[in-house]
Image 1 (tube, helix red, strand yellow):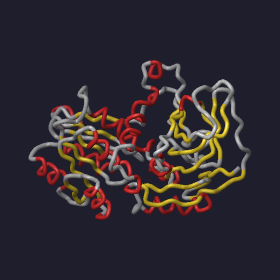
Image 2: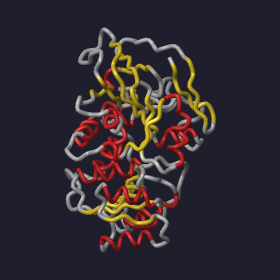
Image 3: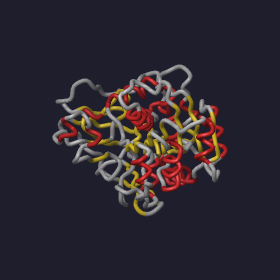
Image 4: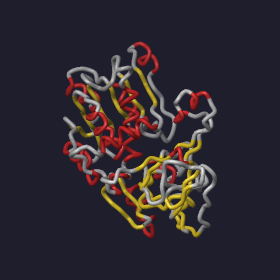
Amino acid sequence: MQRLVATSLNTVTLQEVEKPEVQPGEILVQTLVTGVCGSDMHALQGHHPFVPLPYKPGHEVVGIIREVAADVKGFSIGERVTIEPDLPCWNCKNCKNGNENLCENLRFFGCGYEQGGMADYWTLPAKRFHKVPESFSDEAASLIEPLSTPVHAVKLSCIGNKDLTGKTVAIIGCGTIGLLTLVAAKHFNAKKIVMTDLLPGKRDRAKRLGADVVLDAGSSTLPSDVRAEFGESVDIVFDCVAIQHTISQAIAMADKAGTVMVVGVPAKEVTIPLPIIQDHQIRIQGSATYLPADYEDSIKIIGTKGFNALDFVTSVFPKEESQKAFDTAIAGDQIKVLIRFS
C-alpha cells in the first residue's frame, strides 16, 4: 500500500509500505478522505511544538472498515467510520476521571504515531471509532473531527452553564477552526458574535456563515473596535490563531472579567500581562482536542438542516497530488483541504 510521510521541511512523499495487520481489539480501515489540519501544516513547516519531522500525517480521516478483529463487537465490514485520533493509556488519573484527552501518557494518531490516516490502510483500537451517518457525504464526515475541537472549547467556556445564552463572543481567525467555532458558538446560543481576520475573503465567508460582525484583524485599534461592537468587554474570546499578537488582542478584548479560550495550537511561548490577569480577574483557559460527547454533538450539528460541508471544504486533491494539497493549504486562502485516497 501507499502511505504519505512528511519527510522533511515542506516536503511530503508517498511511500510503498506493508499494509498493517489487525491486532486483537483493532479495526483495519481503507481511507476515503483525510483533511489537512492546521497542525499538519505547522509540523510540516517545523513549527509544531510537539510533532517533529519526519512524521506520518493524517488524523481528520474518514474510511471504510475492511477487517475487524475477532474480539471486536459493534462494527462490521463495509461501514463508514471516523475516529478520535487521541490514544489514551486508560490508566492514569485523567483517563480514569473521564478526561482521556488529557491522558498523562497520550499518543496521537497521525501526529508522531507509527501510523497516520494519510495512507491507503491503517489500524486503530475499536474504542476510538465513530460510525458516520449514511446521509453524510465524505466531505461532511471529514468535518466531524475538526468541529469537535471547537465544540469542546465552547462547552469548556460555558463555566457551569448549559450553553452560551446571553454571552457575547469574539473569535480571532476565520480559518477552518475559527469558522467551526462560529458554528459551535451559534449552536450553543451565543448572544452576539464578532469575528476577525486579515483576509477579506475569509471575513466575507464568516459573515455569510452567520457572524454578526466581521472586522479587519490588521486594525491597530482592533481590541477597542471589538469592544465598541458590544459596548463593553467581551464575555468570551476564542483565539484560534494563538500567537503573541492575537493573545494580547484577546486579553484586551476580554478585560475585565472575561474569558480567553486558547483554541489554536501555539508555535511557541507567549507573554501575558500577569498583573492585569490577576487584578482584572481574566480567565485564560486552554482547550485540548475533544471527548466522545463532543463527537456526538458534532455529528448532531453537521446533520442539521442548513449545514453545508462545501462552505468549509474548499479543495479536494487525489493522493498523487498530496504535495500540492499541502502547498495549497499552507498558502492560506483555503478553508479545508482534503486528500482523497479511494
